[in-house]
Image (cartoon, rainbow, N blue to C red; front, side):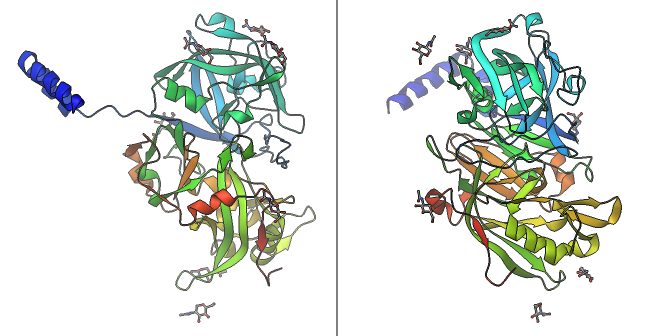
Length: 451
Ligand SMILES: *[C@@H]1O[C@H](CO)[C@@H](O)[C@H](O)[C@H]1NC(C)=O
Ligand SMILES: *[C@@H]1O[C@H](CO)[C@@H](O)[C@H](O)[C@H]1NC(C)=O
Ligand SMILES: *[C@@H]1O[C@H](CO)[C@@H](O)[C@H](O)[C@H]1NC(C)=O
Ligand SMILES: *[C@@H]1O[C@H](CO)[C@@H](O)[C@H](O)[C@H]1NC(C)=O
Ligand SMILES: *[C@@H]1O[C@H](CO)[C@@H](O)[C@H](O)[C@H]1NC(C)=O
Ligand SMILES: *[C@@H]1O[C@H](CO)[C@@H](O)[C@H](O)[C@H]1NC(C)=O
Ligand SMILES: *[C@@H]1O[C@H](CO)[C@@H](O)[C@H](O)[C@H]1NC(C)=O
């Protein structure tokens, strides 16, 4: 009541002194808080090797991006707007760029400074050195980055965000600069011999008031086929033109000290369609429950080894001496995998997990990567092209929509839904609550009778 009274009084005063302005203000739409950036896909230079962090908690195999593709964002840093490029990475929380004193700039296989740019901290009057904080990232296979840490203003396509913390490399090895948007519990920064956690990038945007809560949505396009539509990351909102049907919410089973500190959710099964489009039948390949990471920083995707072998043998048919499955693209075209997350199944045309085999356009090779440990699987770019991914780091939830069958022309007029308290208009996946019984030793198993 108190509020209503005060507010009415305010309006009354306004109406006497400056009615036109008051009316104009109340009628104009509030400004939506979000930031959309185009990300572009480019062949990762040989230096952008991937980058799956080894952790005691869940030792995982490294997926190399070598010879493959990654998604990049252009940034302008500092008072003098130095242009640099970084790879969008949901698989880490590391944000770093190559420094002007980067020792390996001369060797593009280690640090490709001519492609990604260099940042000269000493020439930016707004750079603040966080003295004593160091960057100390290591990604297995010898890849990593070392350097110092500071903060500066960052211009993201015209939106200037002040005081963002990031690393500046002095010695990078086989990596591209990253803009990590995962949890800070993965931070590779150190202070006084301990992990240093800053406000990670999505949190920095929320702190700066650019967005409401630390959240973002990602739409990856296959630029080989659809050059006219950009891949995008939208912080603080999602775009309804980039998926079909509804968004379904799923927990990220994330709790400090327990479960995962990675962006992902629970996969309960993989099935496949057979037959022609007039009479498709769906067959289960693997079922169970396991955590899968949704990682834009990996080009390829894992699959439990027995499911991988079954699909390879049954739907590709041939395996060469280096264990690569391949087969006729024409027959592979007729099959769609469905990835079932907590009761919601998302189509993944089998061809999206393939590339041309041996330079022969009629032959497709299977590009999934078998996971032998089984317990931790990564779904990278070739999977993520098929879904619209919304991440809410405040409530520890993801929402997935299907992007198979999106009308590319419609994306030219985006329709943004601002993420305020949580992801709006997203329904809980049918088995939403079962995510919390997540056990990191659980895996998917091949269904009985298949081998
Ligand atoms: C920032 O501080 C670190 C020590 O923490 C130092 O090694 C580095 O050179 C400094 N960078 C600049 C640009 O002053
Ligand atoms: C800038 O960020 C640093 C590190 O997050 C923080 O300690 C400092 O207070 C911030 N400064 C301003 C002016 O916001
Ligand atoms: C560094 O860590 C040591 C041991 O944990 C602690 O005693 C000391 O106060 C810390 N120093 C600073 C500057 O934080
Ligand atoms: C795609 O992104 C580029 C670079 O940001 C931009 O110049 C271009 O206009 C974008 N295209 C569309 C269709 O939005
Ligand atoms: C694939 O599906 C098409 C149309 O549904 C059908 O005509 C064709 O025979 C199928 N090809 C194979 C190899 O099954
Ligand atoms: C559809 O395919 C299934 C399995 O291949 C078969 O048993 C069934 O008779 C087919 N139905 C029609 C209408 O063709
Ligand atoms: C996880 O599952 C394994 C095997 O089923 C079981 O031995 C273990 O106790 C479970 N751990 C938790 C924390 O539930």
